[in-house]
Amino acid sequence: MSTSQAVAQHLPYLRRYARALAGNQSSGDAYVAATLEALIEDPSVLEKDTSTRIGLYRLFSKIWNSVALNANPEPAAKNLAKANKPVEDRLAQITPKPRQAFLLVALEGLSEDDAAKVLNIDVPALRTLVEESGRELAAEIATDVLIIEDETFIALDLEGLVESLGHKVIGVARTHSEAVTLAKAKQPGLILADIQLADGSSGLDAVNELLRTFEVPVIFITAYPERFLTGERPEPAFLIAKPFQPATVSAVLSQALFFERNAKRRDRRATA
Image 1 (cartoon, rainbow, N blue to C red):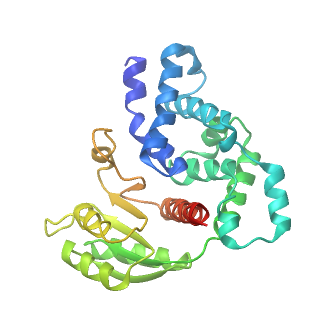
Image 2 (cartoon, rainbow, N blue to C red):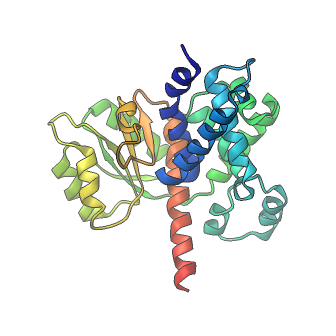
Image 3 (cartoon, rainbow, N blue to C red):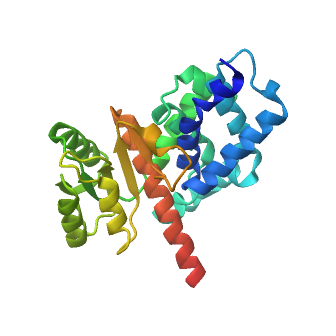
């Protein structure tokens, strides 16, 4: 297999990771594009002592962390802890390096050893970052969640997981029409949606209809993530593959709420 073919098979998942870090498709894809440009300019940056996937993620991380805004602001974080600021202010300051560590393990499913290689740190340091991320993410405010899922056992698993994280499930919809009715009646703070529902309706269509009337962060769950990570059309910013791990749902849910509250915070500042 050529280097380009080896890289291509990992691109959908790198793009998933990038958008989870950046919070949207366009910003995430811009970092992935910069990674590919660096790789084309110098193919040797994929180090021979690592797999193609780890080398690709490692190169991406070097580029991501080279931008001052994305770097780990340790002094600022320490000062913030002493300031006892409101939760929303703390949300805006969740340190990026712990978030990267958490997502590499929980979302991308990397082993501790591989995640440490991506971030160019040792395993004890990685564990410290993951624990720090967990503490910071736990400070988020609970919200009301709508689940759009037609498979009963998966819906029950999601409901139990969401409630264990401190959120409230306002309902489980199994069809497009049920989802629209529930969401319009109760206006959830977050939606977890399967893309293909058993009756032939689409969770994606239901969400698009809802987003015309109010804004809400959405996490899509699908058994075929590669179909929605092609770069050929607008794509979900937050996507979880079936079968999912509880840690993955927890990580992505926290990221979705993080960016949604960050956006609201910026909007209030802009209109103040």
